[in-house]
Length: 220
Image (tube, rainbow, N blue to C red):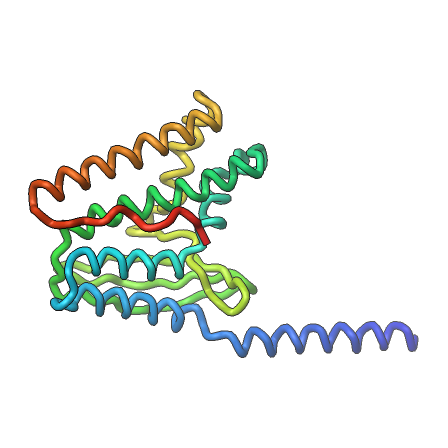
């Protein structure tokens, strides 16, 4: 009986410690709001050049997104089959591809007083979903799937109008791996990144803007 009570007491202490740690960590909505508000501030700042806007948003996104977790979920069963070197290469290329894609969109973006409303959050241990609405000329539902890493809630998927970013990539990448193997997927990603860079250079020549190449390939 004494042993059982001791084990129960020890378990209670562990649970209380875990609750205390969770209570000390800011809620996912609060952390996400800080990052999103900062991005909006950058987009609003007319004193920043387009290059500065791109670089600042890039830094904010890389600090708030968990590209390793995103890569795992994007590849699914193929992640477990990949070698450590292939995993590292995929994370690097995937982060670069996402960055280059939104950089291209930001170049053509004009801020029109959009704002974000936070309508709820669901927390399950170290996982959370934050639901928002982006208000422009219409309302666009956007949900962020996040996981707790240390004391930081990091995004590992974005769901826009019920369409998951990760699911989209998982479907297309799964087909490529099945047909061409993992190395075939990596080769295709490198080609796509090169194409985006070439398009960026053409836009730069056409507009006269000095658009820098994406900075760094190390995913967090």
